[in-house]
Image (cartoon, rainbow, N blue to C red; front, side, top):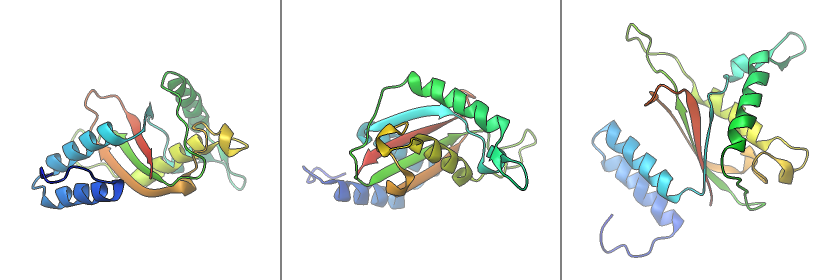
Length: 171
């Protein structure tokens, strides 16, 4: 960003980040910019175990129910959430969210894996929204219908720990 930009509001900031993406020459530049941007400016940062995909989360026909794999993940996610700071969302604000799925992107033979990040985002968003009242959700007042801007990425795990990271901010 230029030195002339002394104060910027969130709209100008998002615009400048998008322009930086357009001007970036390499994918790694974009990834580093995204990671550094969200680390500095996002209010909520969570790291949860890699969830099952939507396709793996439900079993049974004709009556669908949560699969054992899904139930196990919920227990792991509850445990992981307890080790992280408690966050809350202002009751009716729109949200900007970034989901990074850390998972192997290639098979051992080098072929690319087919991974739909949205199938994992849905599981995590639903999990964080659970509660009979919005204030009782895993993140109080979080609801996936409030997400106005969403970014989803999949990346090779740096330390081979498969997980999903979330950066969430109020707009």
